[in-house]
Length: 68
Image 1: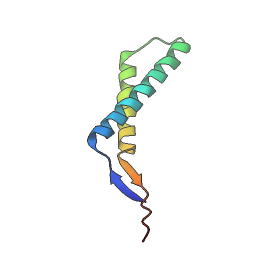
Image 2: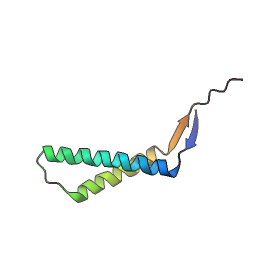
Image 3: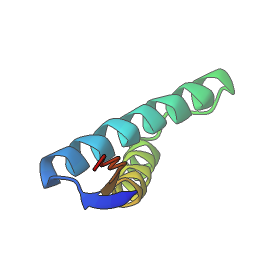
């Protein structure tokens, strides 16, 4: 399998979507455990998790089955 770098636009989109999903999930968890909503906590979860996911998924693995 060959490693290929993804375009920057795709990396940013992946990070933003995964960070937003994680932040909304954590805000829902806080809501159901009766904790107050914190915008700083929401932003931290979204940005930090999104950054980690963008770094983790910056490469695309392709399988090249070349038949001779």
